[in-house]
Image 1: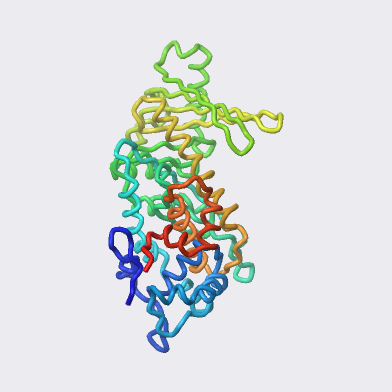
Image 2 (image 1 turned 30 degrees about the vertical axis):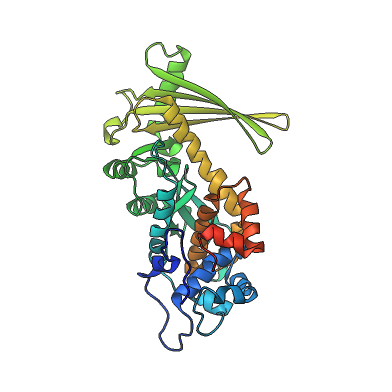
Amino acid sequence: MQVLTHDDAVSILEYFDDLDDPRSTINRQHLLGDLIVISVCGVLAGADGPKAIGVWAQAHQDWLQKYLELPNGIPSHDTIGRLLAALKPAAFQSCFERWIDSLRQSSDDKGNEEIIAIDGKALRRSHNHKKSLGPLFLVSAWSVQRGISLGQLATAEKSHEITAIPELLDNIELNKATVTIDAAGCQKNIAAKIIEKGGDYLLALKGNQGNLYQAAMDWVLEQMENDFATTTVRRFAETIKGHGREDTVEYFHMLAPASLPGKSLWKNLRTIGVAIRTSQKGGKETCDVRFFISSLHLGVRRFAKASRGHWGIENSLHWCLDVTFREDESRVRDRLAADNLAWLKRFSISLLKQQDDKESIAMRRRMAGWNVDCLMQVIGVKAI
């Protein structure tokens, strides 16, 4: 067999050696590795579901036969759909971990501390009214600097995000990383788990934290009114331009006061941060103020980088999934299939972001669909 060869001479198929085949052995006509490689390449090339992956594979049969065994030719889209609906998402994702690790190592910059943003996203059209199921909700972990999806976990509802985050944290490396989470994940047990795994946390505060949020906000406003005369503060401001908008962001980073309600219950809670974003677009001005608690030591630029990084999961991952991969338009009803397809899309973004050119993610994906040489470059394959 001629295998897909990675630049470091490791076959892509070897990443999936430990994956159990969930299919019945009766009348099994296609190799598991062939089906997975076809699915990865199809999604990278523009396919958004089993039918499109199957059509793409049929159109590229001659090319695929150079690299894969395909003992019974190109599999049908029904075969691909059945596999995606049978694979256990956790096992499927774990097989990509070594591939992701190779990306992290090849792009490793030891001078940069890793920022991991965790956030949830609903697949809006994945609801199934016949089974009384709402949209599938996915909690994702995103490496901000490296542009790599580190993992995801599906939940039935957004309200289950609190229980999903600790499980997701168990599956990723946090040592020396700063983990940012929005207000839904601002929980004592989540903060403790991040510290126990060797990381730092930056958690957004909102009304769901009741007394803590109000006390932190009141204390910060009091310090601002007396121009921080009684506390140590670090300040930093920056201007960010993009998408026809200009944002001015002011950051304030302060030591958390001992009087903060329940401070001792939050493991290693050291600082409070505030980010004030003023946006100008189309002649209109809007303002957004966000409060954070953190285990970070006093250092406003580090706080600013982590705070900005959390906004990055919206811009770099969720926006790309909605606009480039049209994820919200997916009508895949099967929960396992929807989960596995969502992971393939996140992994595809990770691969596309590693390309060293000036093109957008959308253009890189189009190029991978237009030209198999570009596709091979994206997945790290040497041409035969």
